[in-house]
Image (cartoon, rainbow, N blue to C red):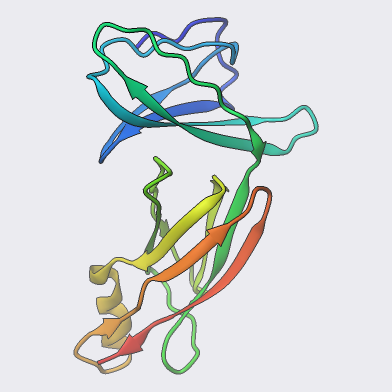
Length: 176
């Protein structure tokens, strides 16, 4: 992987993904990047940058790579979104240390978030699209133990995110 152009100031990034594989690039001039050696196939390319007014921008596009062929992709960047909120137990009390994942087939990013002592979580620089917010089962064991239950469950939540939107959610954990 050979990024072209001047050196990056560290505030922008490009991710090329297929399945669970991720390739992060840091371009210097935002006009082009070179990702040599990618196997033929379908990828999602996503990019993030900071606008001159300080806003975070994000965009993504599908990429079809053919063996031995050069492929161009154009990305339109729009204001990045965020998804934040709280995780609450059956009694309405905040749940700390719950690991959440915001995933989408159209986004190459699936970094987890962990709730703080007040049950708050946040995902920044989210691309517009449809996501599924879910708790990692192993992190719910702590919630279950605090509530005297065998286990705790949390149904995944479908989330639709628009460009520049700040979504606030309450994620509820039940007990079995």
